[in-house]
Structure formats: structure tokens, C-alpha cells
Length: 393
Image (cartoon, rainbow, N blue to C red; front, top):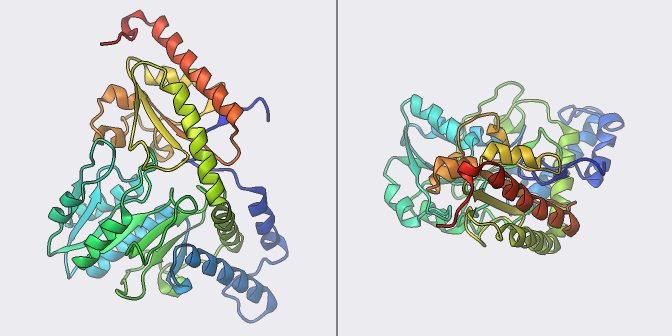
């Protein structure tokens, strides 16, 4: 393990915490029942585990258990929220608002609906990644049925002002959805105080298993109507058919429980590690910090580097560290990050970017090693390619 690269890509995914794995294991072998089989002990055990997990997740975001719908992850939750609202409210209106820097799991369903005749408004962001609330207010129309703004950006970590957005939407009687895949377990979330009507979450960004997520859908003041996107056995009160994956659900809840218990101390520790890494990198000429300097996830750092070949930089870092140049969900594409382009960066800067997701198991010594190696690698690459050697202007 000691020879493996230092893992700093926790926005892509996280390892399953051993405590989470221990909670899951009995539900693969001993308590393996189907939570819908209510005629015997095995089904009752599974049902009880699912109920307990649902209650914990609901409490985490200040919801009720009946408002939590289990899905295969945040992507499915986003699709259920966006397409489900569009189908249920199409007689009221066909206008949807989202943001240029959203994850593709929000942008792609919105564009799909656009192909079906819905109208889509993509709000720009300011240079720090935050939306302009006045622009949001101005974009709302009588036929607007949904506003979708992510809680924490998966690339630059920026935290949008959810409570202010929720108030604007509630005053105009427009549903408000937020993709909280990166935020759950890391920052406080309160669907009542923030006036959130739909919230998507996932387990694998918070040291839980892959393949499990959930959608919060408000059932009171107002009650959100959703058209199911999966039909079958009528599971999840008809909102999402499919046999519930009990071990994953148990792991999801355990991961969130641990994250909440450790959140105060971990927020301080991760913020310190982020600042430690930035102290190393800020020595380099032509370094740009992407996103708001403080209104961001505590474990996120995203930079762009002038006068450097982005692919060469990433390749040069691979022996020592595992980092990303953008969203892992679109890392096979060759297009520059749409998030960084939306911030106003050139394509060169967008290509020459690094996203650091510092995690639960990273240490200060690792951060020093990473910082020193990146500084040395950038210097080496600039020296090796004289035509691209950085000069201060």
C-alpha cells in the first residue's frame, strides 16, 4: 500500500470506511432477506434495517422518513427529481432553470427535456463560481416549474447560498431542487430552513458504498408531485420500483452517521490541510485558485496553471498522487471543463487544471510531499519546453 499513489480524488469517490463495511456485512449473509417479504423473519429483519436507515437519513436533513426515496445514486435521484417534476407539472408550465456549472447528471436530463419542448434557462456564474441571486429572480417566469442549483460544486467545491435560493423559489411558488451529492455529511443541510423541495444524495462520496443514493421529496407545504421513472413492483411508495438493496442502504446510513459525528473536527482538519497545500502551490507563478476562496467545501482545492501542458502535468504527477483534472464522471472526454469555462477561463487554463479532494485518511506529511512534488514538476515542465517557459508579465 505504501507504494501506491497518495489518493487526493475524494470528489470522484471515497474508500468504504471499515466501520461502514462492518455494518453492511451481516446483510449479505445472515440478514439477507427482501425488505418487501413481510411474511417471515428474514423479511422483517431487512425491513427494520431499511426503516432505521431511512429515519437516520431523514433526520440528517431535517425531513421525515416518508420523504426519503432510495435510488441507485445521485444520478438517478437527479433524473427522478427533474424528469419526475417535468412530467407531473407540465400542464402548469414547461420552463426549468439551472446553472451552467451543474453536474452533467443535472444538465443532461434538462437538455433531454429541452428536446421534448421544455424551455431551459442556464444561469451564468460569477468569477468565483457563485450565482447572482438577482439574475435568478429575473429569470423566473409564470411558467417556471423547477429551479435546480447544486449545493456544492463537484469540481471547484463552491457552496451556493441554498437558503436564499429556497426563499426566492418559495416566494414565487417554484419548486427548488438541489444536487447535494458532494455536500451530504460535509456541511449542514436543513430542507426546512433552506426551503428545499427536492434533494439528491449519494453514499460513495462520504465513505459509503457505490450504487446507493436517495432523493428527498417534500410531502407537505408544498407536497411535491413526481412521475415515477421506474415502474415495476411499486416499491418506495410507487416512486421507484426495484428490490431495495439492504446492505447498501445500511452502509449509506452508517457512512452518514459517522460523517455527522465527526463533522466539526473533520471540517477544521480538512480546512487546515487545504490551506497547507495552497501554501505550497501559491509559490508558483501563474497559479489560479478556482472558485470562492472560503465559501467552498473544506476539502476542496482547484487550481489552474498558466503556460503548462495540462496532460503533461497530470501524467507527471501520476507516480506520486491520484488527482483529477475535472469531473470523474466526464474524465474520458477531451473537452475542457465546462465549469472552468463558465468561470471565464481560457481553454488553456481549463485544460491545465487540477482538482484536489482531500480525504479522511490524508495526513499533513502527505500534503507536504504532494505540494513539493507539484511545484517541482511544474518547474521541470516549464524548463523542458522553452517555447512555453513561463515569464512574468
